[in-house]
Amino acid sequence: MDKYDITNAQAQMRKGFLEFPVLLVVGSGEAYASDILKALKDADLHIVEGTLYPLLSRLKRFGLVSYEWKESKSGPPRKYYNITPEGLRILEELKNTWNFLDSTITKLTKIYEKSH
Image (cartoon, one colour):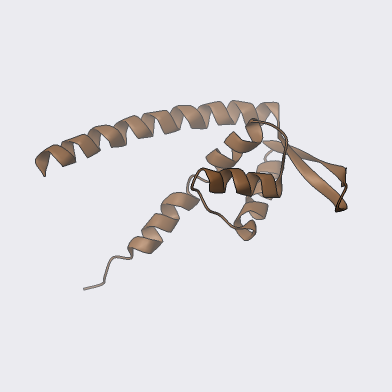
């Protein structure tokens, strides 16, 4: 019998929802990639640049975020991300979906805990 790979399952759960927390961060105000990584890390969601940059590119391709280059005092210009009006609309839909899923999982968790 194959052994269930819990680490893989946990990674897939995180990957499946990363767009939502990234949009939450960018939706809170203009952000440089390292600012986004720090905000996620401060919220105990650790992702690496190699995950973030492709995700930001995908969000830009779908018109959910935009960016502008700004001069930096300590090096080359930096790319700052902003949420677009379409990004705000999608963020609201994702928020509603998250609230529904959170409520559902909380109910099922309570049923499980009562039985154990």
